[in-house]
Amino acid sequence: MQKETLMEQEARQAPAIIAKQISRTRKTLISLSKRVKKNKPAFVLTIARGSSDHAATFAKYLIETRLGLVTSSAAPSVVTLYNAKLNLKNALVIGLSQSGESPDICEVMAYARETGAVTAAFVNNPESHLAKKSEYIIPLYAAPEKAVAATKSYIATLAGILHMTAICSADSKLTSDLLKLPSSLEKALSMNWSPAIKLLKGVKDTLVIARGYCFPIAQEAALKFKETSSLHAEAFSGAEIMHGPFALIKRGYPVLVFAEDDKSLEGVVNLSKKIKALGGKIILSCPKNILPKKKLNDIASLVLPMPESVHRLCDPLMIIQAFYPMVARLAVSRGYDPDAPKNLKKITETV
Image 1 (cartoon, helix red, strand yellow):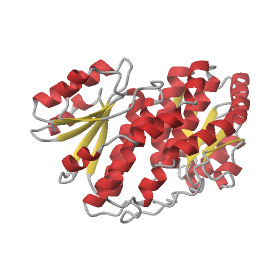
Image 2: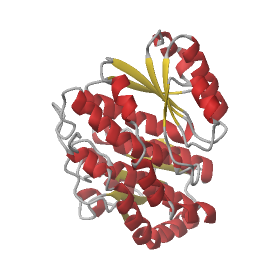
Image 3: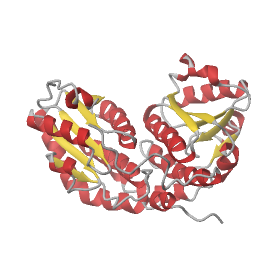
């Protein structure tokens, strides 16, 4: 049996981390929610890079659909290099970072707070520079993450954003269902995704397709393929793939598809059928209770097993939880060390 890499070991810590995070951050999130209601921000700005920026995309979908607030991802260089004077007064500005030490993220957060924004940091280290420059600190409780590729900190960030949205939107069902998330993630870890390793071991490039809340998961999966396995992968929304990237589809071309139980499902299923008709190999993952087994087999060359859905907004976290151990083992099978990818380091400093 293949020895677990550090990346896989850390990914498997996520369920316990999230159980701790949910119990310990509620008070701070309630305080933040009251402040947001009082200030009535016109918009939300997220500040992040890498995997954390994929979590920021998840925040965008959640905040816009659940709170009705336009949410935009910051381009830090607008402030740090070009010295733009942004009007952030009363905006809600959210920084997301595993380390909390990237200079450009910290500088934009400091600027936001100085100019009157409500600032909140979702960060693994509550003593980091980013935390110190923020008014509200929401610790991820992921503990030190030693593998270069982020795993448990990414899932913890998604859970923190989900918890914040549940409280700010007064969604009692989502708040209650979040308590079931750790056990749901444990079940996701027990899913056998090894057939995907056999299918992807020898390929040079692939696409990862999803829509809505699962699109940030597709972004993260594509990054991990590149980062750990030297497998060129690009993430596309199912709504965008037909605008040009569809020309890449050919016989035998592998396409990883994440499906979720909402209004995007029909479109993702129909897109998968079109890809299959062109000879593409669909590798499909979705909670097992949202599509009948026969339909899954009709549209996919390989169906990756998943537990039943606890709440549709929790499904993306289950999918990426199951994905991480698989991609770590894929990297090893391709001759790479996912704990220490070439040319990369844990903390990336940009200005």
